[in-house]
Image (cartoon, rainbow over all chains, first blue to last red):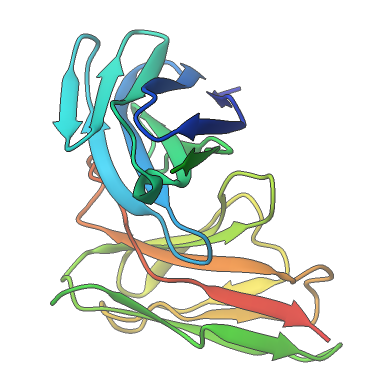
Length: 110
Length: 113
């Protein structure tokens, strides 16, 4: 069975304290791995798609990386406005539908 | 600006009542999806549609129904057969079957009263 596991479930950081969120997956024939940001009471906002191991993408303070078993979302010098839940999703070959993880809730204290 | 509009933002349902959640997109996307989100759980797929007049059941379709009469619209009906409908419902769209990211709406919070 395809699985997507995100860790930690919750993370508290001080402003400026860099860290990483993890998304591990067990799917065969990865087509794409997605990262989303979700603010409370709102729909998820697309951040990145990664397609193959070794690929990296960046957006402001966020950098996503991908290996054959997991993806990391690195947050450099976070600010309070980076506080949100970050969702990971994986789509395998032959499937139209991605499998979502449960998310990591990030709180950045000023 | 293009996007997805969900309405209403909040909805209250009485026992035994059917309610319909609206989802409209102006992105010219072929595929549309309905997800349910409960606290501490990942997004669970209810129904999806890749083309007008065609849709497929997701993992938790029981107690729900959909229609896709227009490319822009994908309404979800929560029927009285859905015994635990209180949740946050999200509509999404994508450009096709390739691994493009979804565009999500702002969600509808449904509460049973």
